[in-house]
Length: 120
Length: 107
Image (cartoon, rainbow over all chains, first blue to last red):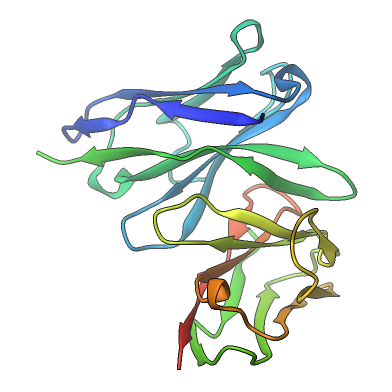
C-alpha cells in the first residue's frame, strides 16, 4: 500500500522555524522526484518545491526561496522541508507528493497534509 | 513564470449535467497540463495528466483536452460525488503553477 505521511506541523511565531517530514512507503522513493505543495486556509493550491532523486537538484517558488530548504534521506524513505523566517502568509496545510515523470510531469501520489500556523 | 488562468471560479449544475472547466496558460506549455480533484479536507487527487491522460481508476466521464495554451476538463453526466473543487496545474517548467480552482456546486 502506498503511503505518504507528513508530520512536524504546528504553531510557530513569525520569524521562527519548523521542519516538516514526510515518510514514504509503497513505491521506490529513491528513484522518485518529490514535491511539497501547500494550501492556505480556504485558498487554492500552491507548488512550493521539488527535489530530484539524489537531492542535488532543488527548485523553489520565489516566495520561499532562501527561506525554505527541501531535502531528503533515501536511506529512511524520508522527505523534509526546513522552513525558516516564517511569515503569517506561510500558514497552510503542507502536502508532500510524488512528482512522476511519464510523458509529462504530474503529482500523482499525495500525503494527507500537515498544518503549519504562523501566528503570535 | 508561466501563469494559469482557470475559469469559471465556480459553477452551478445538476446531477446528470455536462460541464466544462477551462484553463489558459500565459504561454505555450505543450501538453504539460494536469487536472486534480479535491474534496473538502482531503488531499488533491490526480485525474488527468499530460492534458488528456486519464488516470487509472478515474471514471470515463472525465475528459481532458487541449494543447499549447488552452485546455479543458469536461465532466459528462455529473454524479453527486463530483460536486467538489477542481484545479489545473502546469508542469512545463519551474515554478509549477496551479490554476485558481473551480468549485462545482449543486444548482
